[in-house]
Length: 237
Image 1 (cartoon, helix red, strand yellow):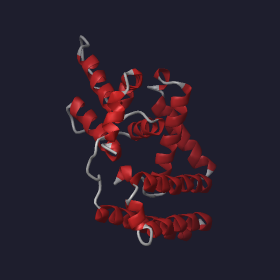
Image 2 (image 1 turned 135 degrees about the vertical axis):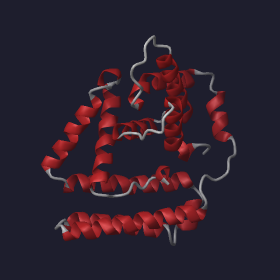
Image 3 (image 1 turned 180 degrees about the horizontal axis):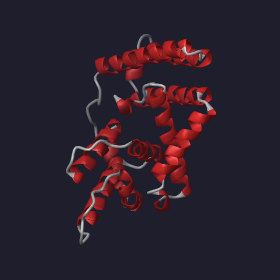
């Protein structure tokens, strides 16, 4: 569990530190991080790849531009992940076995579930006002699922945070399907045009599977932003 739920924050902090400016990550950057998490890339490999990418950039003879996206680091990250996988093995398994304190306090998780349930209920009311009865019901159902975790199943959930994360991921995937169904053809087409524009600068350095994962994560992020629906994963706590 060590660093497991710090995946996003540690990558963001590493990129900002290497870049030397407190810039905000773009939608593409966040989608990239999600695609790496989905692919199971170890946090250690991602951080090492980012550092190597900036070291390589610093050795360039002329630097009139900055590294503005995590996409620049993709190849170094994938190479670091391959090296870690091909290493003699003790390192990763030993780190996983190390005991570490619980990443969250029970009160933090309860407040997080309650906050997200409230935001889902607000989105449900807004959807109903706008005539989206089916979407409103889907949002309300997801809110009820979160409140259920935060009440009778709460203590059981805290005993296994990875199982709780799988539960939250399942609810989030149902939400993704509901938001996609509720979107107009025009909105989805605009989101996909945005994806194409963002991917233009990194498509040549990625495999088809990596591009597919990135497109899926990018679309998901835009859908949740558009409908003002919170992400549910503990990674966002």
